Figure 1 (spheres, rainbow, N blue to C red):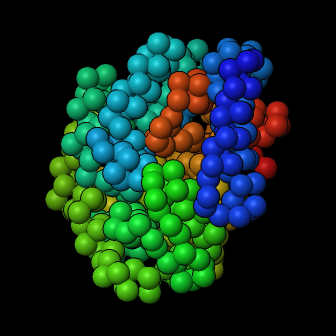
Figure 2 (cartoon, rainbow, N blue to C red; figure 1 turned 135 degrees about the horizontal axis):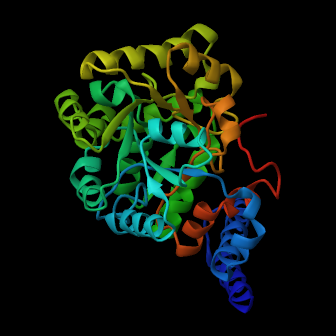
Length: 370
Ligand SMILES: [Zn+2]
């Protein structure tokens, strides 16, 4: 465990050197560092695998977003092609078959079927074709891309892309709505500031929208940013014809569903399904929540996903897939494997199930049932 203690010392050192933010920022960072340290200890000692045997399910669903070469330049949103390759190699080493969501549901119902993984990519980024697909082809690995209508039509309020553009510009950024000024001297301070703004927004659409005047003041056009990174209708149609690709729903406006009234929440889910089915001329049967935390989606949203005719719905709750999920297929957990930079230990904990043990403090291995 000595490396663990060394890591904690290093984290403490970083915190002392870090001039950004006050005690709350230090406490938040300490929480992240502590979790990361524990993940490293569990993952690299092999202890995670033993402790978490109960948490290893039949399948694991992994989430990615952008895949690009310049991860630092893109402020660590998305991950590198090398990281995707590392995940695929690890799945192969574990003898987990990479399957479509349809096959995953079949396998959950069949005790004889082999263990599996499902690869999912959110938001419809163009680099999923240029950067991810060639690697997936090498591994004959199917992928599912969850596409919000607004990304394709350029009407989505992609505040996260606006923030990235803002942070890429200057050394100092004032976020008026937060009444905060951030000094962005280096990559760690930029990443810390982005995390803080993300935490401040939480699941509050109004706060996300309150960033708009800041974007306007810096002449940042969200539609232009979306146009730069997301597939358009023609690209989606052609991508969907690739034998390894499944297209799934991801709402119309990519907002926090829990903040919408009943009619608006249902419409946001259902209209996206109709849009994609009309665009692709085929049924769209799988769905991922735009924000998949417990605060952003739950029982009500799962009912609407089912009522719209989707067969599965994926959250971002940590955990593996178990046969019990067949009774709540519209609230199935997913593990994020597309954040930069995922360590070997963090990947090991996602594949072994240890991460859910850690996140729930050894609570219920089956995510999403209550
Ligand atoms: Zn999304």
